[in-house]
Amino acid sequence: MKLLLINPVNKKRKGFIIDQSTRFMPLGLGIVAALTPAHWELEFVDESFEDFIFRPADLVALTGFTANVQRAYEIAAMYREAGIPTVMGGIHASMCPEEVMTYVDTVVTGEAEGAWPAFLADFEAGTPGRLYEGGITDIDAVPRVRRDIYKYPYIYDLVQTSRGCPNGCDFCSVTQLCGKTYRERKVEDILDELEETTRPMLFFVDDNLINNKKGAAERAISLFKGMISRGIRKVWFSQAALNFADNDEVLYWARKSGCNMILMGIEAETPQALSDVRKNLNLSRGVDSYNRIFRKIHRHGIGILGFMIFGMDSDKEADLYARRDFIERCSVDSYQCTILTPLPGTALFHRMKAQNRIILNDYPADWQQYDNTRAAITMPNMTPGEIESAMHEIWLSLYNKEAMRRKMFRTLWNTKSFMTAYWAYASNHNYGRMFFENISLSHPDGVDEKFEWKHRSRSAYLKFTDRVIWLIYLVSWKRMIKRLTA
Image 1: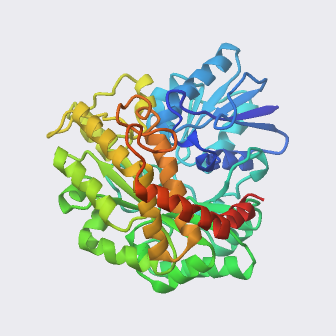
Image 2: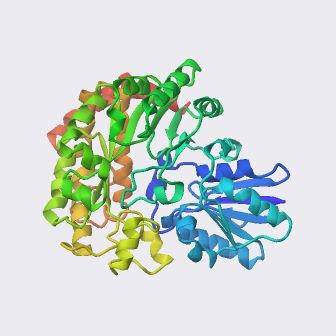
Image 3: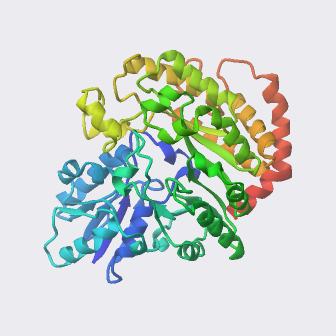
């Protein structure tokens, strides 16, 4: 029998697929493939690279984030109309199983390892159920991802070294899906899987690469040293909390093993805003610790991609612009600046729903707008229109070419790394493309496709740094890009 695996994309906005470097392989489907017996024929379709067309199959399995679930429903409808069974898992299916069950034949919630084998056995016996609850898996039962299905030109290989997160931030559903306890894979098993990867760049998709348990630093160092001793030469990045900077030896070996950038949830620069979203780790460390942490990471040549959120309950318009000013002033190298969004399954969603504050509530169609660029809820101090208007101005001021270039040279100064500076500069360009997707062409005083102001004279700074950038490209970036894309 033939199993068709499908990764749908949001047809309303491109978002992360706007650039090839941010089109990530769906790791969950690779795990499903690894759990599927050998007598099944597998085919994988990723709409990040090609528009879906109907293909024959005996069973169709879909995954989906909230923002692209509407497209998953459209594809499922094609197959149900043809009498071909459909099954869906992933984060949205786990958070909204009742909704998903109206659009597909079977729903898998939680982690696939605890449900997929039982579902397939029932399917082959002709008695598939409607709902299979995978729950939380013993980490030793997690198989290595089946990577031969990833036929598309992804820039990064994805590897997961642990599951679970104890932090419980208000806006995040990871704890609901994967539990509050870190479950760590054995380092040797991770290294064995890394040796199977083929791409020169790597993304560790852990929610927090360095956990909060005793021995976390030693485990991380063992992993990084193992990569070096086995000759696993990768440029890699990952997600981590502020505790990533607690141990200089961790930072040293992270950089030595190829760490180029770390994604950190900064969220906000004031205690009140952090309290609004229950960002307790940052509160306990204190906002005054940010610059010290940034400097410590930079000393090892590692860049920081800071996640920032706008539109907390306490935010007034002046607070949004103050957060923008903090981003410009601090030494974060790249920045993702989003509007607070109540994703299903989060504490934020349940509270906003109970308070009748969700305004993008025509489901499932409105799920397409849950991409962190729209005001989905009412706020105490600003209207949704005021938030979106302010964010348009903030995005323009942060992602225009001169602002990004000034950040890039600051990164070069702080890290002394041409590669880190390149990655920060490229990341900001990618975020700019995403945020400008709906506003750049329509905004009268906006920027063009090159992120330069439409109706302003080109600054002397840009003219001068054009030559510097070209020199850096000839000296370093050209060789680096050639090595990474060979």
